[in-house]
Image 1 (cartoon, helix red, strand yellow):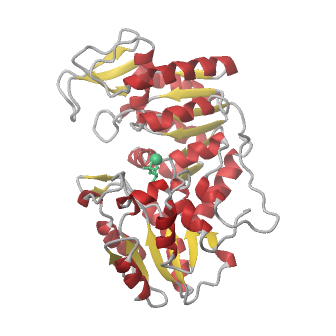
Image 2: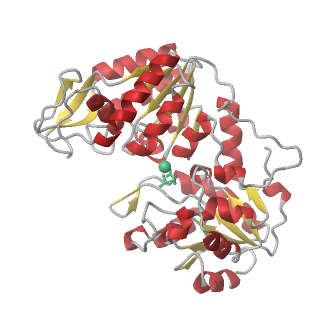
Image 3: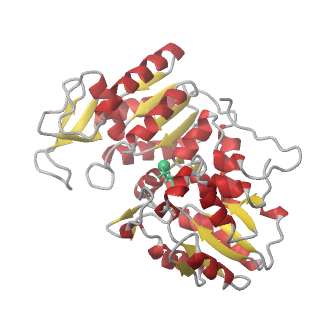
Length: 409
Ligand code: 3PG
Ligand code: MG
């Protein structure tokens, strides 16, 4: 590790601001996957057991600088307390008098959770005043939010420049595991990228084509590519303004010899609901009927992906292939996940998966424990793989002579 870890910190009696990523998947007010919470607990326990006063800070969802009651982190205090088996205090703001009073009231070994950082516009702007407000709460900063480290925000980057700053155990584990698995990956490398967050991931794909030999595109993102090639996509989720980008990515991939695998068939339905009437499989070439939407990739696409996986040595997977939360649109994701698990267990494939929805999908498929490594990060993991500097990591203090090893940009 080129960065200082909490091994270099004696936190006893100190107020420690701990940047966590509590941006967990939530559906109808219920947490659907607790992986990020569970993997954060060892750092909190270690710090608290050593006598730190732990102040946990995180963003949740994208409230865009305003207080959005449904995006409050308050329910997470209970979830965190249940996972830690110890009380977690709450403050209704992450900077200002209320946060300062709650931080000052902490005793050694106690834990406090602060309200969503993104309720303040200064968070995403990396506003120095916001970073100073956070720094005021504590004497040291520990960043355990690898999954948010690709954001140069006040609570990930700005505050780290204002306090002595250390990598938490989860941050440390993520960086070490990714470096071991992907610092110099065995080829061919296949990447599967899917999910619904289309525009934020499209740019990443361009860079990935230079890192991997096969790029499989699924989920809503595939619709944008198919539409960009002039295929009808009906009512499918897609981003028309990204067609130019999609075409450019396909050209770039061709130029560097990266094979891009788009769906050859799609499962379509008139509406997004469990087992909707009228559901059927169509060929991607023929396109999606005008009154239908694509909700999963079809069996022919799955067979094509599996054939590539059998020839691959390394798999990087971020994003489900279909709307896996709603059956039967989990079929392709589950089938591919099971093939990946089998190939991994046989020793033929090193499989690295990351991202909130991806973890939930792998858990749903029952194969979470059978991947080589599962990261809590999605976007950050892909940016790391591209060889980009992650601002939240770069802002941490280096150990003397420490040099970060990353895939070459
Ligand atoms: C994530 O879930 O990928 C991280 O928490 C970052 O969230 P963001 O994509 O809204 O910045
Ligand atoms: Mg993200």
